[in-house]
Amino acid sequence: MKLTKYFAGLALGVLLFTACKDGEKTEQLVEQGQNTTATAAVTGQLELASFEVEGMTCALGCAKLIESKLAALDGVKSAKVDFETKQATVSFDDAKQNSESLTKTVEKIANGIYKVSHFEAKKVN
Image (spheres, rainbow, N blue to C red):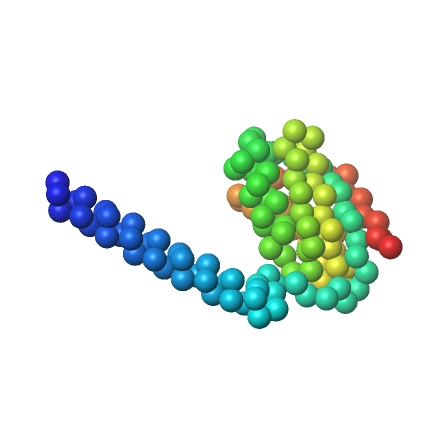
């Protein structure tokens, strides 16, 4: 029992030590004026898309998963998925993404249980 506690404490200490090092690197980069997030310049026009997502069963598992997959796409500036209204709103660079790519991204998650409908996009000035 004491040996298990020892190894658990050691593992926790190593985890905290390595996590602190990563935080220090991020702080150093910020202090040097380097951005730690990948933000590319908009090469096309910024568009705002809104669409309905059918098939979601929960806010944390479904909506947040879809939101994170959309936000990770190249050219997507922001993504928000509201479980209650079943609405998704995505701001994206039209030179890097389009309605078809956004729809395919959502519909391939979780073996196709989510369906996109009522897709509307408009240019943002």
